[in-house]
Image (cartoon, one colour):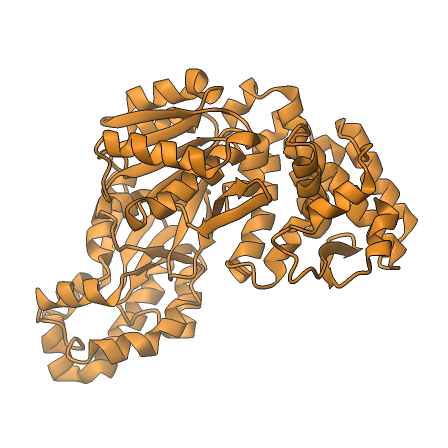
Length: 505
């Protein structure tokens, strides 16, 4: 018995629903139903003829009957008409046993597509109609911006969602999948076209990851170049970015080139910054190879490089086309880097998902489940606040203290260890302000001890404070900290007196 959910593709006219649906149905070996074509076949008239004979309301009633019928079936790929799911009840009916995806396109592309097809009853005043429907389309959880993507690439994104991929909605009306599983690095190489990697690709990685995965991935892709940069936070600089620019120019990279950031957080941030700025922006695919970058830096679109005065002072927002998390690569991750990644996992547990604080989840054999739960916390935050205007700052719990440790020690302390210490300091400051009690502070310290992470450092407090004062989250010398109000709840506290801060240092 077929119990698979239907895949329902909707969106405005000209978004490519039928073309993508046909490709997807072939890819997944499912039956394809184009609702408009099905209505025409049953009525014995074309859509324009139905509108002329029965009016729009007559056509909508035919749609409603068909939706109720299709909602009782399973395993279909369905392309709806542009107005079929504008009605709340119809979205609810077809969504009971269906995964609904809304395809979007910018107005210029819609105009070009509609110019080629004049036989649409509602096309005459399409711009007003699109504006009227936008708020309804936006209520659909899964959004894919089709601009700049081939139908095959769009179909691959939808297939990933059907296979359990996570999804991030972005401010431009689109989004991107986060695909998590084992062996994905080589799966994408074998299916380069649907991943949008059949054209020119530049793989940017570091000296550690290149011999493990970089060279093999570049060789497996149809047309890829490999650029290798030094490893470590000390090389997350404009000089490294300039080196990558030069190498890309030498290899003929243009605006159609896709950049793959293959590595940890430093590579993701640096290569992502290059993708955001090279020729005013090129497609980016994030393939994180450390636990820390999987659960944190690869998701959310923040990219950038450091200056001597502080971390991430030069940056941009660059949403990736996809994030591919191959948990098999964690088998080659050094134990220190696993522990460093766990600092971010604990942070996500403290601000949004306390279940992540369960020690039975902290083992490498639980990596896929651990990563999935931790990533979902970040998705929940960045979808609400994509540009860090509000609660996204909660993801910086402990980071003001931690970044200052890195700067003061010239990055001699790994990021994860610095964040662990920073989270404990933030907890102590929260307690001193009466926000949390000693029991929660002790629980946080114990969690880090069990993982093998430090909770304090012998660092001159005045030097530490001076390093924090250049944090980009501070404004006009006014302090700004992310603190805890309770387990699972963070808050922003500004303008603390120097002596209050110095107490916990």
